[in-house]
Length: 278
Image 1 (cartoon, rainbow, N blue to C red):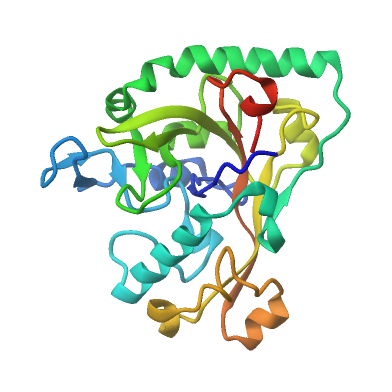
Image 2: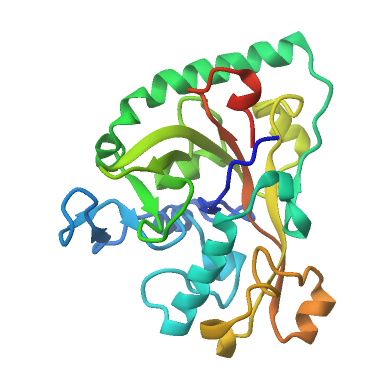
């Protein structure tokens, strides 16, 4: 398994912990009016399409009491940066207690045919996004653009919502970019599913013999009063606390599972194991 760092949090990301009113969910995915931050092409200027929140996430539902992005107190903003920074250094081959990955199943020729078809459709569909300005113009939003990351997620609210119900290989939830001196280079994409689905449902989309979907699990967030100076060696995505009992003792808030299922694909790589390497 490769050592590609994953930020997910994103990630994206993005998902619905349970069913709900369709209209209410659509409202959750509407773009805020003052969505802007630093323009990477013109320092000092702002531009739309950059996001400090978790696109598509109803944080009050999935992580009660944790407000991400604009409107947070300074301490909460520092806690957010700490948590995301920790996630940005996570590698899938160093999963630890806070990441669950599906087990690889024996593959069949049919599985590889399906996987190769997904890759071809994805590659063709996202070719235009090699110009990241096109992604921004079509509604993709950068998660935490001012926080140094090994991979930046450009997430589509609309795609994230529709992915909860149907699958189109040409419609990823997020695009993955490496930041450069002049902008961003497209390297891959991410598909998502709600955390409530079964592994058989994941397998029906992308064969579990080819790719390993993952969930972020057993997260303990620090007490609100400590978020500005929390010890993220104990709390958060790389913290040592991984049980409700230990989290309660530390005064934190425990989340058995957060966000939804995610899988990365790198369709421009030259080998299957690199394409599906997590």
